[in-house]
Image (tube, rainbow over all chains, first blue to last red; front, top):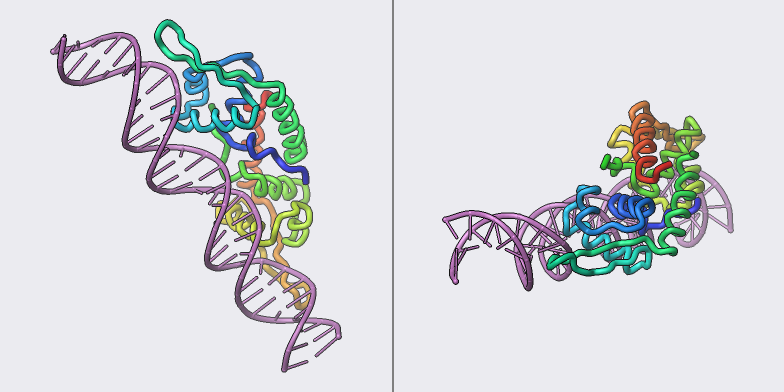
Length: 93
Length: 93
DNA sequence: AAAATTTGGTTTATAACATAAACCGCATTA
DNA sequence: TAATGCGGTTTATGTTATAAACCAAATTTT
């Protein structure tokens, strides 16, 4: 059987990627609200996605507040699509 | 966001369930070959599915050799279908 | 203006999970 | 009878997910 990319086969990381696939860019706070994850968990998982090169993270400011903006990279997009294909096999969709 | 049944959101358990959804019954050896899992890992994961009531396991004999036959239960079938629905939301399929 | 609270995160500790390795009982073969 | 193979289970270990604790800067309260 084909294997499921373990980096994507995690509830929170998958949710994040799924959001980013449709939205072009999203900040930490938005992702936190959408996924209902704790900040700690989200921080860790974003880091993994970022280290893997699946997303980019840019830390900037809005006024005086920090703002972390995430985007899915080309590589991440490809990985996500492959994951979906693999998953379809498992689920026979 | 809807949550993904953690019992099914595991590569091997998902693979097993997917097979059982299409096959009506399958024994340990068959599942091991199909999934390419180690016997130990398969044993543990079958146990979890069984404890959760998602599959039934029947230990019997063929001649003098033991044979463990698995079937998906009604409950397991329902859980699998719900998992697939939830997943479709994540992936927007 | 000092103290308390909120915001936007990160680090760290812990619990759950997946996996492989070692093992077991029985049957067969050498 | 000793070694080998089959069908598994148990146990030990590494990974992962998650929450809890923490931090610095900004805002609000007193």
